[in-house]
Length: 444
Image (cartoon, rainbow, N blue to C red; front, side):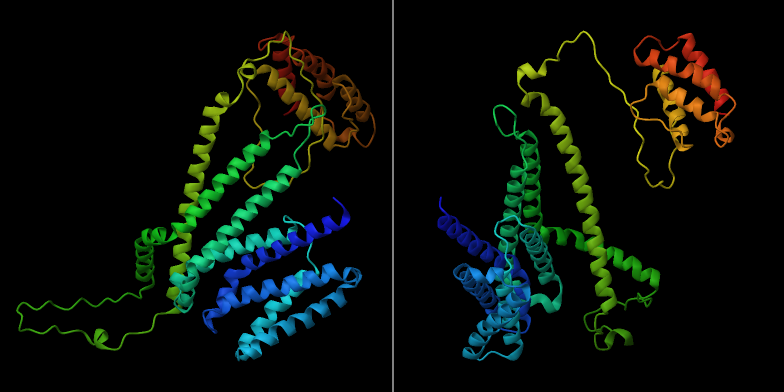
C-alpha cells in the first residue's frame, strides 16, 4: 500500500468517525427541541456531519493547514462554522436562538475536523462514547418523568438507538485496545488470548445487562413507584405536612350531599419543587440500592460458575498435577510500602502454626530494625541481617532504641528461622518452643 492509498484510507476512517461523533452528541441535540421545531435536532445532526466532512476535506486537500498554529485553525473553524450556520438559518427564516444553536453546532464540528486525531479508539472518542451512553440513558429516563421534558418523548427511540450504538462502539474500541496490548509468545508468535477472552466475556455480559436495563427501566420505575410513595408519605408524617383533618362522612342515603371541608373545597395548590426533587432523590436511591444488590448477586453467580467450569475448560493434560520430588521456595526480604493508616485497623495476630510463628517473629524483628534506621539490604541472609542489627546496637545513638533481649534474639532467631525455612523443625520442636519463650520476654 503506497502513501496515497494510506492517506485515502485514513481520510475515509476520519469521515466515518466524525459521523459517529454526531451520533454520540445526538441525545444532547434533542434538548434544542424545547425551544425549536421537532425536526431541529435532525437538522443539527446533518449540519454537524456536513460541516465536519467539509473541514476534513479541506484538511486533506490542503496539507499545509496541519502545520498552522492552533490559533489559526481555531479562527478558521470559527469562520467556517459561522458561514455554515448562517446559510440554512437565513434560508429557512429561523429565529435567532435557533441560528445561534446552529452556529454552536457547526463551529464545534469544524473545530473537531481541524483537530481530529486519526483512529477509532483515541482518548477523545472514548470520552464522547461515554458521554453519548450516559446522556441517552439520563434523557430517556427524564423525558418520561419531568414535566417540562415531555417533548423529548418524541425522540425516545432515537436516543435509545444512539445510546446502543455508542455502547457497542465503546465495546469494540475496548476490544481493539486490549488486542493491541496482547502479549506475543517468543517462538510461535501466537497471541496469548486467555486473559483477553475472559475480559471480553465479562464485557459482553455487562453490555447485555446495560442494554436490557435501559430497555426495562419503565417496568422498574413502575415497581419502585409504590416504594417511593411510601417513603415520601413517611417523610411527610415526620415533617408534619400531612393533613390531620379527618375525612368527610360518607352520606347514608342517595339524597344527601357530600360536605367537604374548607381546605378541600379550595383551588388545587401547585406542586412543591422541594417534594418533586425529594421524590427524585428517593427514587434514585432506591434504584441505586437495587442495582447494587443485583450487581453483587451477579458477581457471586459469575464467580461460582467460573469455579464450577474451570476444570472443564482446561485440556486433560493440564488437569493432572505435575509430580515433583521437591518444591523450591524462594523467600526474600522487601521493605513494605508506607501506606496511610486506616481507621479501626486491626493489629496482626500471632500465627498458630509453629513455622508461621517463627516467620512472624523474624519479619517483625527485621521490620522494627528497619524502622529504627538499621541498614538491612534485600540481599542479606538472616545471619547477615542479625549481624547488621548487632553492629548498629554498638553505636551510641542507637543504644537507646534496643531492648534487653536483643542479643539473645539475634543469636537464636536466624538459625531457627533457617531451620523452619528449609523444613528441618516441626511444630513441637524444642527450638520453636524455646523461641516462643525468648520472643515473649523480648516483646514485653
